[in-house]
Amino acid sequence: MDDRGVIVDLDGTVYRGNTPIPGAAETIATLRERDVSIIFLTNNPVLSPESLSERLTAMGVAAAPEEVISAGAVTARYLAENHPDQPVLVVGSSGLCEQLTDAGLALTDDPVAASVVVTSYNPEFGYEDLTAGLQALDDAALFLGTDPDRVYPDDDGQPIPGSGAITNAVAGVANREPDLVLGKPAFETVETVLDSLEHPPSTYLVVGDSPETDIAFGQRAGMDTALVRSGLTETPESTAFQPDHVVDSLADVVSIL
Image (cartoon, rainbow, N blue to C red; front, side, top):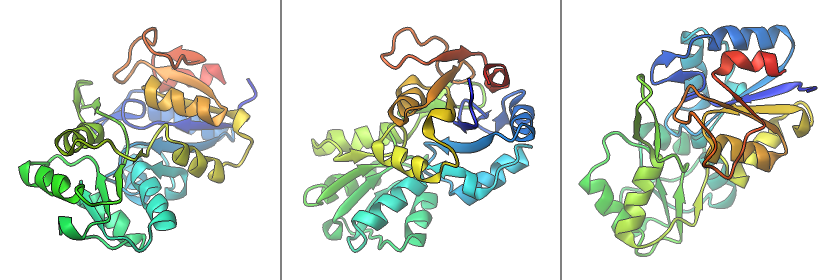
């Protein structure tokens, strides 16, 4: 392969919860020594690229904010470009709210006033949030999920609920499916990544632990793909999104390149 770039997932690929995956930091350092372009692409909607950069750096993984693309950043960009003046009700975290506010969007806590409803990960999600989403979707023009991840791995590699679980809960009670779900593998996320590339898409390798998000994203973007077993997926046989490579962890990616 003649790869000049790598697009790396975070949860389950670089770390699990707050625990770095063995060999991840060393692999990123080796790729940089070989002058490989690196983009960190995550469906985490809570932390901004700046905050994710700081988190990675604290784990020993050098990452500049401009090298990080998150589901929260994609959501903020999409709404700012397509619905800049519409009141947004967020069923999600304060971190996502900050990103949307920083993008110039107007947030509201009033379900009746909301034109857009955004559902996303929030560990404090509860009955009042479900009620607000239900009432807002009675008239809201747009129902948007930040990402499809129903689960993601904790420090021990066990699944815990993600954004998709909350989006599904709100959709179920409102009897209305989302109009759009961003994050990987959405075309809007593909477009955001393609706009940031230094080299042609065909020279990039996508590395992640989810066939339905990471591998599907790579296929949509015209990139080679590698599935790591360090997250929630150990074997890809049962998925329609078959990777080009299957390795144990990010540490094995250097051998692919």
